Structures are given as C-alpha cells and as structure tokens.
Image 1 (tube, rainbow, N blue to C red):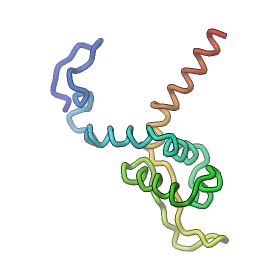
Image 2: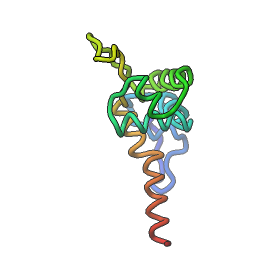
Image 3: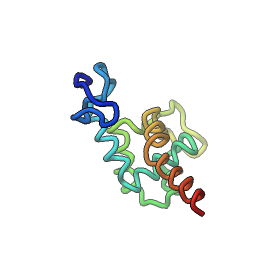
Image 4: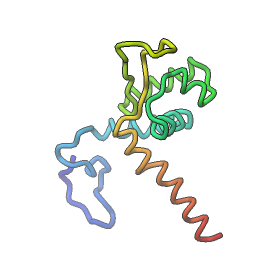
Length: 130
C-alpha cells in the first residue's frame, strides 16, 4: 500500500496503492463497505441514520416500512463492516427499548463523499442543463 509511484493524472497502477502507508483500514475493508452500501436497502438505512440520528430497530422498521428480519439482516451487515454501530443503553426508554443504531463517522463520510455526492452532482447537472 502506498508504495507505488504514479502519474497524478492517471493514479497508481493498483487501486490499493491509493491508501497511505499506515492506513486505518485495508483496501479489502474499504471495498466491503462499498459493497454494503451498494445495496439499496442498506443505503436507505444508513442514509436515515445519518439524517435522523440514533434510532431503534423498531423506529427504523417503521420509518422504512421493512419487515423486522430483513431490517436486522441489513443492520448486521452494516455493523459488520463498520458503517453503523449498535449502542446499548443501561436503562430502557419508556417503550422498553435498550438498543439503538447510529451511523459511524466512516458511514457518514461514505455517504457524504460517495453515493450521496453523486446524487447531488446529478441534481447540479440537471439544473445546469434545464
């Protein structure tokens, strides 16, 4: 990682060489994050958590109109790759909820500088040529 010389216009020969020598994550871990957020349902879950903040699985299920087992499958994937974290409370809320999910800093950054940015650019281009 980070050892190849490259032309500034074309980039390195290997995509993994885009990472600095002491990268926080491996190239494979970054690719797993991309794959995870490439699923529409997981993108919507992460987007909702970034936009609205911490939510329980029940709140997410209702907001996204998803079956519980489907939601938990996607939440587990997002947690496994580090885009979402599951926070446990010591005491329940008035509804008896102990567990909440929230987007991690990496999850927020991936949206800000990834798919969400592409969607914003699409609107900018549409406005420019309207």
